[in-house]
Image (cartoon, rainbow, N blue to C red; front, side, top):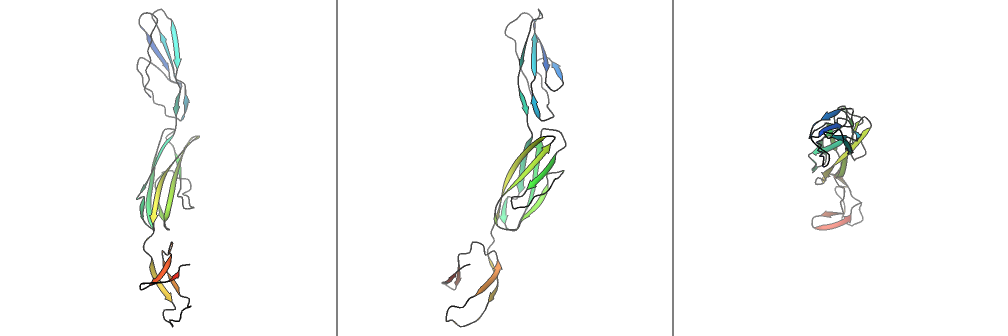
Length: 193
């Protein structure tokens, strides 16, 4: 954090003493100070003039844990394999991570935020990364879209019969989600179940 302060009254040459609120002090103008741990700090500037008159002012510095999350690719045909990653900043240098993949599964606790996850079914998912450092917790999310591939037909049963109507036909295959009707040739013959 970069600090600046000034004196507007008093006499002579001013000295600037800083208490950064983290157990460290500094002198001069303008100082910078790194805050390595998450927390709220109250740095104090004390200005002294040439007659030893002093005045102090405080500011509040709130250091939070920052976190970004990424997924590559974030869209494609199901089954979609996504490399998920994240970067934490702030807090202590030791982080623990966990992913909620948004499909009912989680990663458990990790020492690194890098994972590979496969979204087997088509849909829109939100993968959420949680980072913990000491008592601080941060979350960030990335949207994932697994698109539905074109349906494939495996077996039609029965595959032959009379054309008198009323015959139940079972069609098996993959990716029949959101199917609305069955069409043979140019004729729609049944609603899909």
